[in-house]
Structures are given as C-alpha cells and as structure tokens.
Length: 209
Image (cartoon, rainbow, N blue to C red; front, top):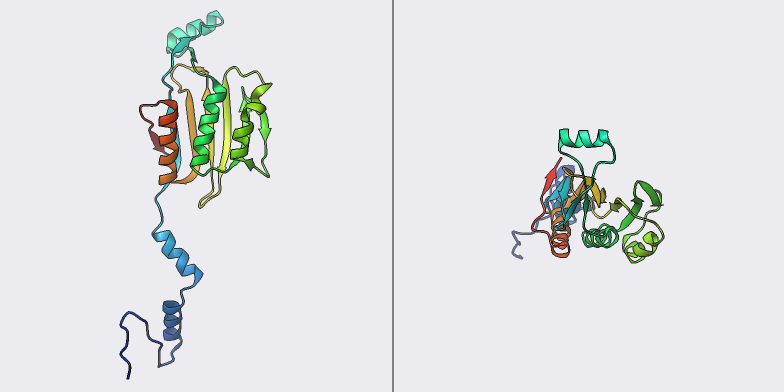
C-alpha cells in the first residue's frame, strides 16, 4: 500500500456532490480562482491622484492689462506670471514619463485651449506621438499652455490629464496632473522619479481624492 502525500488533496471516495467539487477545485483550480489569488497578491493601486508642482525656473510677473485687472490683482494678490521654460520640450518629457508608467495611448492634445489632436474612439500610440510631438506642434504658435490626455489600459483603466502652463495665475502651479481612475503604485513611482530626475525637481507630492 502506498503512503499518502499529506499535501495532495485526495479524491472523495464517498461521492457527495460537495466533496467532488472541493476535490476538483483543489486539484484543478479554475481561472476564476486563479484570478482571485493574483488579485489578492497584486500591487497596491493608487486612485484619483492629483499632482501639482512648479519647475525650478525664473518667474516673471505680467503687468495687468487694464485698470480693473490691476485693482483685482491688488485685492487678491493673484496676478499672472510667466514661467521661464519652453512648453514643447517640457511636454515631451512629461509624455516620456507617462510612457514609462505604461500609459500607452494618447487621446488628445490641446494648445492654448484649442484642440489640435483628438482620437476619442481609437487613441493613437503614445510612444509614436512622442517622436512626432515636435512635428505636431511645429507650425502652431504656443503662448500659454499645453494639455495632454492619455489612457492607461493595462490592469485598470484610467485617464490622465496633464496641463503644463507657461502663463498662469500666481497661486496656481505650472504643472497640474490628474489621474482619474487607478494606477499601480510602482508605475506611479516610476513616473514620479522620472520627472524628478529629468525636470530637476526637489520632490513631488500627490493627493488622493
């Protein structure tokens, strides 16, 4: 008589339906069971992140354009400033950071509040767009801002909206990033560390909503 292996679930010699199912599930786990195990041991998901930061560049105050603007600036202390960085190279760096964080599809590009690129039904490849970014923006005069919308479809679907503002109100930030949905913690840190390194930031904080 052979010795039984205590780690192996033995078939139920008393054939009750519940015992049969327990034996089948133990010896041949279903895809559903496997999925649950993977989910339970999966990475932490960060949800609905809002990241805002300024670049380490010189800011120049923009004089009010009229008397009313001057009065409002004096009351609120929130006049307009111009950042000393170039929008297109900064936008390219942020896009590369998103690609490293596994955002693979680009949905929209808005320049100075005008949509210049939009693929709502069939988003284009983000990495290819990075290579073509300078060509897309070459003939477009850029004065104030670039806004990029990208989509993450790996694991959990989410949308990221990145606003990079050369001209903005003093109390706002030059870069505003909203990740609507979920992102793996590891992917977010890859994105964060890339921006810190390439943009020369001292740090980058995010809040969850």
